[in-house]
Amino acid sequence: MQGFIRRSRVISGTRQLCNLRPWQRCCFSQVAQKEEADNGVGIPKMPPLDYTPPPYTGPTAEEILAQRKEYLSPSMFYFYNKPLNIVNGKMQYLFDENGRRYLDGFGGIATVSCGHCHPDVVAAITNQTQKLQHSTILYLNPAIGDFAQALASKLPANLKVVFFTNSGTEANELAMLIARLYTGCHDIISLRNAYHGNAAGTMGATAQANWKFNVIQSGVHHAMNPDPYRGVFGSDGEKYAKDVQDLIDFGTSGHVAAFISEAIQGVGGIVELAPGYLPAVYNSVKKAGGLFIADEVQSGFARTGSNFWGFEGHGVVPDIVTMAKGIGNGIPLGAVVTTPEVAEVLTRRNYFNTFGGNPVCTAAGLAVLKVIEKEGLQENAFVVGSYLKERLTALKDKYELIGDVRGKGLMLGVELVTDRQLKTPAKAETIHVMDKMKDLGVLIGKGGFYGNVFRITPPLCFTKEDADFLVDAMDYTISKV
Image (tube, rainbow, N blue to C red; front, top):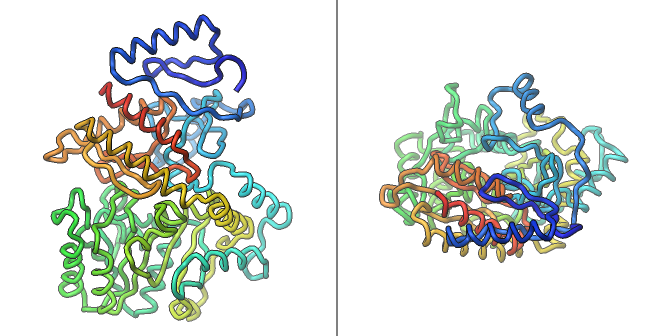
């Protein structure tokens, strides 16, 4: 940063000040001190960053929005009353068309694992693109094999056969197909409030009306969600697990293809599964001849901090693991990993994916694994995530509007309610706080069936200073609600 002050600030959530002169800084200081006296909470300051993005000369946000409305699907939605035009990124920060900096607390929906434009990942992509951008898996190329081998080394037991896809939806769709072929059964059990994708099979496994169309979705049974906050049995995982056994006994032939579950429900509002739930369900599903599919699309790749994969925190080993998002730091990439025995079923017919295993994408994936290890991002997710959760929990003690704080590592949720006893979703307040935090320079996501949960899933390079700024911005904003 150059000059007296090169940092964006906001007064009353609206006016941006840049390059202040000494006399202006005095005025700013007086205004800030007055607001601090009035509200008891000072305007938070963004951590410094030694980076200035190049000047942006492209179309404005208004022009892009008009183009989008005319030429893109009307089903596409966006955050904020005034959508942001993001044009540049640097690690855990993003920049808009005016060069204003934002702390990215959402990570492109838990996708940016190493940081925006991480130099090692960019170099891997660039180097591979200059050599070979695409051929097909019908020819040999070392990129896909190198990444598959490195990926398999991160998984337990005999989970070592990889099939690459382009997304989490594709990965889950393939996993369900494999389970049905392997077991000879059609029935699959998933959880209420789950989200597994928007294709034919995965939409069936998804259990939120918000994400389901009225099309044929057969053979999926939705079990009671083991939600410690809103669930009827609180944190008693074994009681919820009995519902899965009931579904097997009374809703199927007694045999099932699979049970599919996220370790922490992402779209559902960062919902952790009640302790003891997965081991109990695992036993019931195994007795019914089914496979266990672990959906690690959002919770994988060190995001939970304590483990590299979310399922490891529950003491179970799945038969199939699906992954995407953080696998490529933003590159379209997904994968299904299973055992050699289970993988064999796909040889019964031809199964092919033109872009799955693309050399550029797999080169990026390998670079991501190396960065996570080299920079200790799993440990950082644990340390910074634990600190961030502590600070958010303290905020819950301060404001009745916050009903629950949950999650692990850098996959955290903050649920807003208007009545703690009734747990009434604070939908309008969630949108308002989110918008005002954006004005202060903090971007976070939202989710949950009622749209009242902040989803905090930043890049894993997040620092404690970033965590302080995020919480201070939330504190400042809620103090004005």
